[in-house]
Image (cartoon, rainbow, N blue to C red):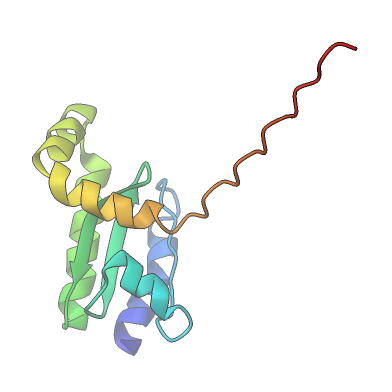
Length: 121
């Protein structure tokens, strides 16, 4: 994991001009988060676009992990809107399932209490 972590930390600089944000989450700090996202192997990466999980990668090889991540990001950055539509349609099931897990992490908005009605006196 340490070798992958070092490579992962270089990615924000490599993609500095791309519309990409990188986040790293430590399993020992947030084990519940990993369970809720369905992460079972390490290292593991999820790629989100417009709050939809469009790719998930887990591999045991640090060298393969870096090339897989770079290839995936490059392919996504080069996709036209039409290709995105086709991609989202072809992988709707897995994308919907991963997106639902992601959205379950957000706190539910508090419901407003109903306003008391006032009658004319």
